[in-house]
Length: 185
Image (cartoon, rainbow, N blue to C red):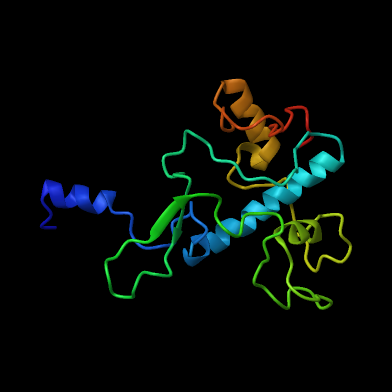
């Protein structure tokens, strides 16, 4: 394709434009939307397992940085001073990205017919509780996942647990418990 070794390395190492999945700009990435629905479905399943006493799960609102993820650089970048079509860099500093805190407001209106104002992250999390009778949607299945062995998330978890394959970050804060292998499938 006409790339030298150095050109290829430059392309592989190029960060690209905003929208990487590890930033708060992730919704700009088209793959965010199909992945996000499945992530919410997974959280719905975890919340039901917790409510039924099958697992423990810390639902305390918080945001922490893992030390073993190369893309998690603990930086927040302000792009407002960067002019379009310029190669200037943003002003970056160590902090928690706006939009991740419990009381940060989501910019969506019209999500619910009785919505009065904007939801906070925590308010939206409470709204999407699977026990909320006013939730305007349901998933057709929560425990069945075609990509998992036996079509079951819990079966896949048990296989991973028994094989010694890590199922989560080893340096997660206390209280970020993994599901119990005794949970029903």
